[in-house]
Length: 163
Image 1 (cartoon, rainbow, N blue to C red):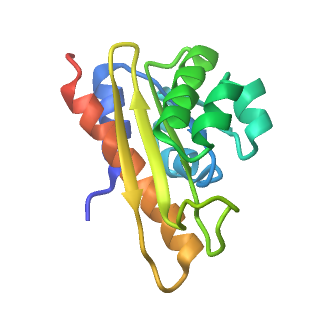
Image 2 (cartoon, helix red, strand yellow):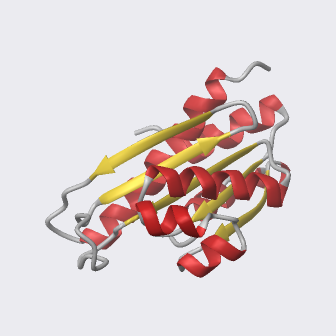
């Protein structure tokens, strides 16, 4: 299995780029995975855990209309979370994630395991939607899956960036 955190840090260092995170359901796991890598201080400045909608709005600048119309777990929300993280941090790339880790739902009609991820630069944004179905360790597996897929998406975006 590829260590996407190590690969992302390697690519960021190689390209002289920096990264920031805006996390909801992963609760800082992506930032932890990045900072577990030796040398990550050269590429990682900050991570924001915006678990509540109030923080998504007040800190990351997610529009109230977006949250009301699409919900916290949506492509639109993770896009705005990534944009806000880029503005706050001055980083070259941001990764954001919002989803329903479970094992219980969030009171909407969205299923446990539905997770949206965005990886954004000033020039591009890529979105990934996960529909995980786990029968054991549901919360842990959803969070780990989301963090790994987020770092994989970062690597994809970095691969497409010119040096």
